[in-house]
Image 1 (cartoon, rainbow, N blue to C red):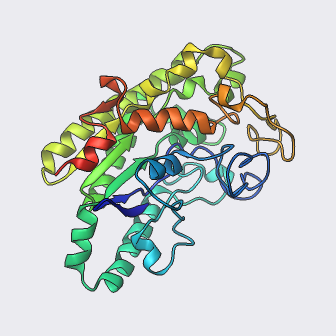
Image 2: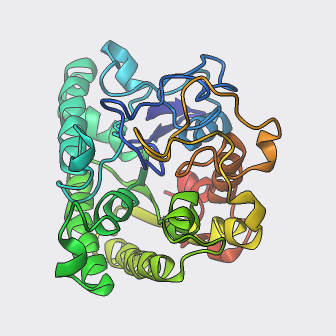
Length: 331
């Protein structure tokens, strides 16, 4: 997402909490997905707006940010989103589900966008000046667990690495990818940590429990702790940039404290596109009372809660060293 609001340029390159693929039978372009979204089903894995949509509204955007595949002309100066369902930090993540654009390729798409911006703006110096004022929102890593480490029948990572070793490998690769982003001009970057994946309906059903799966959440926390430390290192090594960590684990804690919210709002499939909404079936009526829409993704209300706390921290633990509102204002 790239846009200018009140003389501040905002860039969001990834939709937050990508958990499911957008190819073959696993799509969200059918009802009840989008039942509360103005444009109906669009591929958003929720009933209404996702977090990128809500953040854009908070910042005064008039339109929703288009995806890289359809953004054309001067539109790229006003917003580009590079998200790809099932994509991860690791290139193989989500490969058992079909085609996806993993983070390295998303970064290449971002670089291609910059080349087009140079043509529009006139030169690379002016383009860099534009990019230096942008806010980048990056949220990735959930799939490296949901569609990799936690499905040993498809991937060997679970048997090759302990949770700590795997978290280290992920963050090491992520660090290199973020350096690429920095080299391409990013200077204000908000990194979203991983939520309590052990509390999503799919994990509860897989482990036949009504309580959050501690072993999964403990593995997730190892990643988050290393990511928070990485933010400190990046801010030290790249003083011209500002990196901040959004503590989605803490923000998503409502999911574990209110267990009745851990049920999906729609009827989910147990066969094809397992865990996603069954096409054409009516969802629950009290959607605002649910955190989860399907077995993986938040409802619009869940997205609102998350992005509001990411934008303006409700607790000191919600962000480090600053929330998004202060990141935007930073020099």
